[in-house]
Amino acid sequence: MFNSIQGRVTAKLADTLLLDTGGIEWDITVPSVDLSRLPPVGEAARVFVWLYHREDQMKLYGFAGEERRATFLEFLKVEGIGPRGAVKILGGISQEDLERALEAEDLARLEAVPGLGKKTAQKMILALRGKLSGLRADAAPAGPYGELAEALAGMGYDRRAASEALSRAEAELEPGLSGEEKEKELFRQAIRRLSGS
Image 1 (tube, one colour):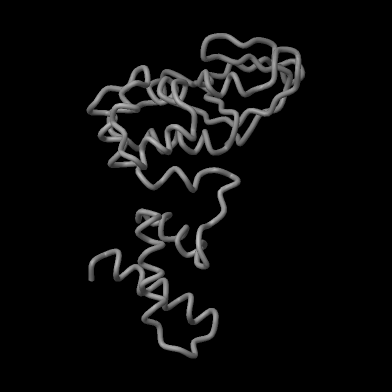
Image 2: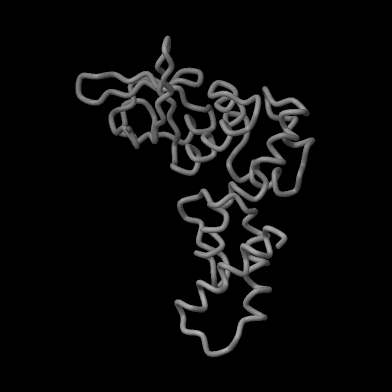
């Protein structure tokens, strides 16, 4: 529905940004880390948004970048994390620290984030490990078959495991396949490896 809103920052409050877009002032809930990355009061800003809508409530959530919004949406897939909890967690850790903690399975670092307990941190590691690094807008697909690895990650496979499966499949390919045939066969073989068949 909405991708982003551009306007003049009229106030920065605790986890809230007020943004004027020519006569309409938007009240947007923003994690504190993202709030600090946005321009100061009086300056123009672009905020990437997500609309939360329920029968009795509508709330607009905003983020300094697309990767932060994508991370927020990934958080909502984790059992026990709602929009308010996701904002609190994102407000207590940078994107880079979060990705490092998940990849290293650093439970202590995650538990140090305000509003994040041990059980939820464990659920986050299980659900999100290997999924956040590709969310950055500047993240380039890794390896010669990065696009194939991204497609496999989009299907729910771990990105690192997908890259490894593609490398192994490439070593066993028959020579003489054209570029498109080679990609199709690599994709098929990688899925077989990842699904254990």
